[in-house]
Image 1: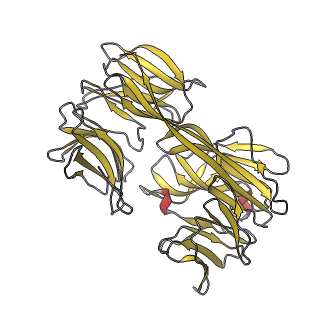
Image 2: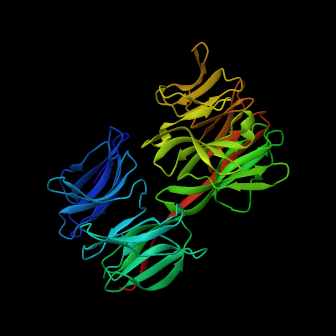
Image 3: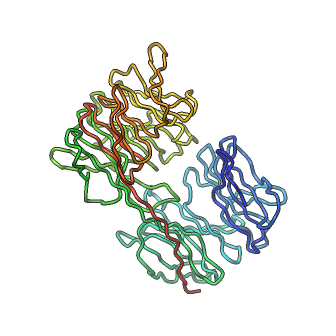
Length: 465
């Protein structure tokens, strides 16, 4: 029905009730998402909505008569919008704006009268509640008043909502039965959950479908003088850890540990700092929406501060400074409406960020200890050393490395191997199931890396009408 075209691809989709039309988000050549529709049988797609100010679109459902698509917009000004998009004209009718809060899921009742979605509960930035909104935008109400609930899906009768969540440690699948006034008449526990469930929807015969990801991600470290033994960083949250970063003195290892439910590929993380010599761990709850990478700086403040690549709760993407004592963050280099992936960079000793935005096709970069050379890798140029003072470039390898790290020596990661690259090349070290995220201590004595495996299972469960 669709086919990836270079960097362009299809993302979220919804199918009409008569199964003749599919609406989907398409990441276009200009770097933002547009809303398209296409017939399920032979036919050409049509662009319904295309606006760079609405950088992300998510079609959620078709109206009962198939004339409109219920859509979530996430705009560059950090406003989330629940809206109808008319198929014949492309006209947009905004029902509600949610500022920077983005619902994890939105679903339309079978009679087409009510929209269910999740958003932050009042006076909270961690717990979510389920809300109902009239399909014409005229009325709205909060359905759940305590606990943390998300991913609402209507039953085929429209008399119940199925949601994931709970209070305390009771995370799982619940059924909320509604009375005639759409108030909760009863709440029924159905099954325990893992926090890795991504609901797909309800079939006409009242079978709930979801994908459950079974993944294990673990951080290991080793002394390079004793490479025969790798140490697991922690056993407290087994299988939930990744993205290691060494402190300046090589005595502490910071890494990300997953917490909470997944949001279509993005996960909430806590930062853990391990003292290698004592085994003591401290946890810092990063006040960010998503954290992808950690870097430990090389200045005096680096003992109590980390830099984190990701996005905050205000729609900004890029680099943030995380205080390990308070958990507070401040912006280092981030912008509203930008994806954090665009902010490739490496920390300097003065706490500033070195960025090479103009280097075409860059896969990875690393800065040497004297801060006079940067290593840059990419599919077109291979591995290049760039002298920052003179601008001279020296090609030292034809291969493209997905990750680079510079301690005493320059290391690279590619596939399931880690290898010392410069000034002398070493033998590749194979790490089975190696995943993104490795680090070399500044003195070159210790190496840390991530190992992961993943499996996705499709589930279905027949539920009560």
